[in-house]
Image 1 (cartoon, rainbow, N blue to C red):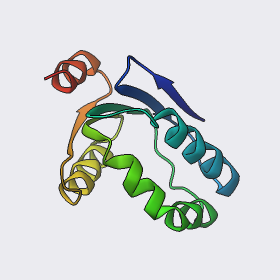
Image 2: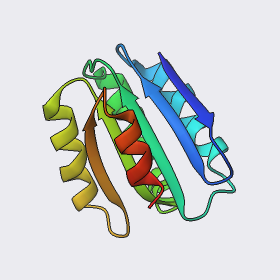
Image 3: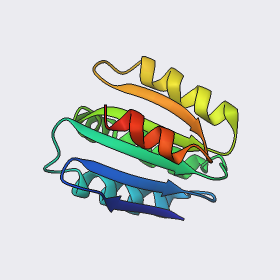
Image 4: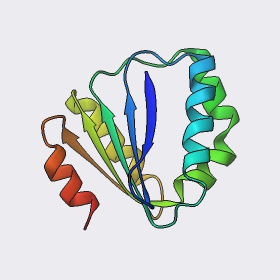
Length: 121
C-alpha cells in the first residue's frame, strides 16, 4: 500500500507498507511527483509501519526516474520518517545526509507528535 495525502500547502504525508513492485512503484512515483508540483520549502512525513524490500522491477523504475526524483526532492527541506524498525530510521537519515539542502530525521512510530513538532520548526 502507498498513499500520498496533501497536508497544507507545503506538506505531503506518505504512508508505505507492503511490497512495492514495478507497477505499484510507477503509480506511487507518479502520484508523489504530481502532488508535489507546486510545493516550495516543503515538508514530508513518511509513515512506514513495516518495511518490505521493493522488487527489482520497482528499483528499476525508481532508477529510471532519478532525474525526476531529484527535481522532486529539492522541493523539500525536512523529511520526518516514522518507522517501526530502527534500521529504517537510520538508513533514512543516512540517505538524507547525501542530499544537499534537505534534513531527514527518523522517529519511532509512536512519536508522531514529536515528528510533527520537528517538521514545523
